[in-house]
Image (cartoon, rainbow, N blue to C red):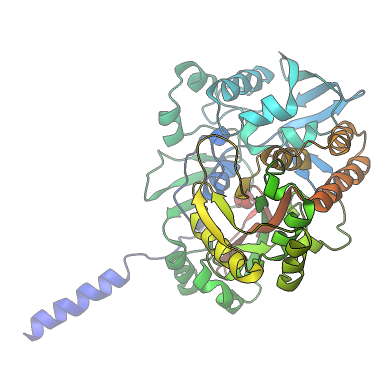
Length: 477
């Protein structure tokens, strides 16, 4: 019996040591399972983190300052904002084939043809009438002047694909073994449910990155125990505990935001007073602490931090929770009472909580229902918008479209902002358009997404961007 007990103790010891922890020179990173590794067809944080290491975008763009940092591009220039020239740096894909201007032309044609997630960046935002390639030079001719081209071309979904997959159209196969032009290459195929290993190409951060797929709570505990270097998501139940890591944690703005869109042509919501009343009846803090599990911030502006140009000034009155004022506005507008709030895929839980809160705050009947596939709506709908670019034009035009808002002055300001010659001029015009939406309120801002990460003591230089989260290529151990 003693011998059996000894074997049992040894077995437990071996099981407890099954994960030896990070190896020297290897950065271990915990992530969720990416939705795909096809860069133009993803919008999830894990997918963008991985593809952000496998590919180098044409440029980095800071929405707050309008600063463009060329990456795969050597320069992105125009003299009239209609004709743009993009000069590429010499580069190769991880399969050894050259990255040329034609690589981008062929990839972008495919993105639009396949209707991938990033296709609206090309068809609705960039709107190039002609794109030509010559060696390492791209020339674009737009259908109107636009100063937003550097912001649009920085979109992570517009990175190039190698000629082999563009010829084969084997998108599923490519997503399992992607070939990019970035600082890391995938060493062997991606293993769903397990992860993959990245090998450094040239100079950079860690020589190897071990990407481990798992649940955020377990990954958080693994970092705390020293068996994982970096956890890229912190679950709600760990939110208040992240300070136990001292300065080894960070939060960053995600390109994601939630809104309540009103059907401005529906009789019950045609009056802006009613819309403001409903906006004041939303307890955003309850949504953040409840169904959204501390993964968001209550909205303080119409544009989320990841998409906001320049300094933010002034207050967002419709972002406040003021139930008495909300009820008074509905009474002032003779609101008939009763409303249905519609929700799309993935938004049911927090929309139902929102409807219950509106009912209690405003003392009117509010129910929640799945959004019908077609037809006009008679009540407001929740929107969970994931952005493809850092340009405010994308979000503001989407919000107007979703609510049916067609004010001509708003459209003019949006067009002028798109055509503006400088980031400062564009920022001022975007703020005018934003302020008009806050005044007329076809949509009420609810929340903006943010990401969390924690890391072990041996990890250094963790920086983040809205679209990739932690920049894996910059992390050292």
